[in-house]
Image (tube, rainbow, N blue to C red; front, side, top):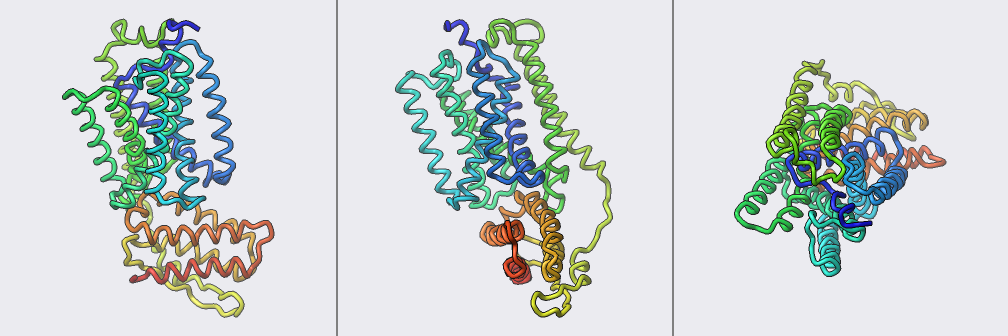
Length: 414
């Protein structure tokens, strides 16, 4: 394959490039969570599916002879999903601290760059004109997503940033990187720094749209947010596809619709449309009837396992940094009641609501008090494991759910 045929395998670095990159980051994270939790595939099955899809998409990308926007950006979205899953596997499954995984991925990225540079004597995205260089490029892209996920989560937990502050800080770091570039900093260095920062920026923006209003978000939910971002990506990628001619990127700047001005206009319009649509949908939700979950907990009696005694569940009014956890206590109370009646099937069905609600509130709760969040997260996992065992027993399920409820009550005023 000639150099001429290989010079167009990756896009030009334009405003459209950065907007699609940020939007694809959020799509990747929310879609993976949706498959894992809402659909119920679990992390192992989701990881396997995403790995097969990623390998398939990369094979198609590597076999193309010119820059093809739809397959390139499909690869980026899938890399975003899989890069996030790698970090989550180390953190949630293997229990590796985020500080350690951040350092490990940083070292791995340095190794990829070192080997790449020694082999090709350049790390510039504009030089991706051979199969080997494209291989190095995608290895670096995957590692930057994993590093961005780990570093973003670590900063959020260690510094208690929250998603609003996270969006401002990581957005500010990207602007500072651009200013450094304009003042003479190396193009290659600033590109890869910005590329890493777009991962936590996209995640923070996604959390801002998906999190409940009592956690500081707009409460759109993962599905609506994903559809908004996906619509914007499709519009921009279709435009890219229409602008790319026989020689791909080389012709993107040609014509009245392909210059820098129109590119900024389209990228800005897409970002603005997502922001306006998100805000409008948030307002359109209107005022919802407010229920008092604390009262529900107090009014629903719970039969203590092994005694047959009916006692009211303790209301939970946490004064910890996690805030009011009563919404979870209501579900746990229901699960506890079903387990005490040996209705393990009903408890297994009801505990799904706890899993989804806890996962949805992850980004808003964890930064408030990472240690207590992890304590509850581990105990929720124990309840899920006990109820979803191949042969669950009432004793094991009761022990796990009672411990979880005790922890929720201990946090009351703790």
